[in-house]
Amino acid sequence: MDAFKAVSPLRAVDMIVEVNQAIAERGLNRVGILGTQTVMETRFYGGVTSAEIIAPGGQELLDVHQAYVTMAASGVITEAQRSVFDAASHRLLKKGAQAILLGGTDLVLVYDERTSSFPLIDCASIHADAIARLAIG
Image (cartoon, rainbow, N blue to C red; front, side, top):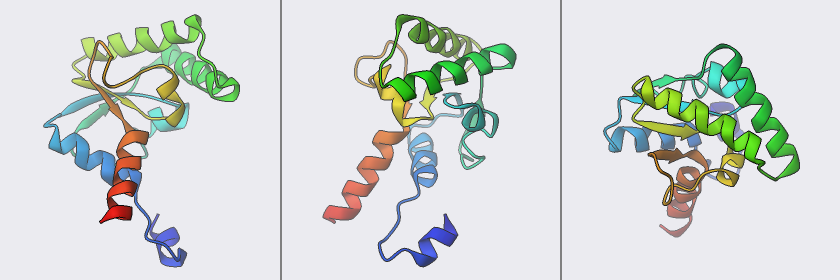
């Protein structure tokens, strides 16, 4: 991100910094994550320092990854994919996650922060809000 900021003619908004700040502002100290294998294994690229990030493990991590990339490629969520995400989310919540971090923009096909039965952190929404704040003020 620093290399990009150095060459960009526009101000750049670092999504990971914004998400880290949003987690801190919400007072969360343990957050589950859904996304691609890379996003989950690196715990959102290691950029969140305000809370512990926990990911699904083993086969469940691979199942979430597969459901995510298939959904992202098609732009449609199936009930089978939704079941994978729901099961992983509920398992992470049972492990002490206080919210689920949507570590991929396509997860808005599955969850809505306003109507979810459990707390969500929508990274894409946080990033968009930060860009809008920069643009208007």
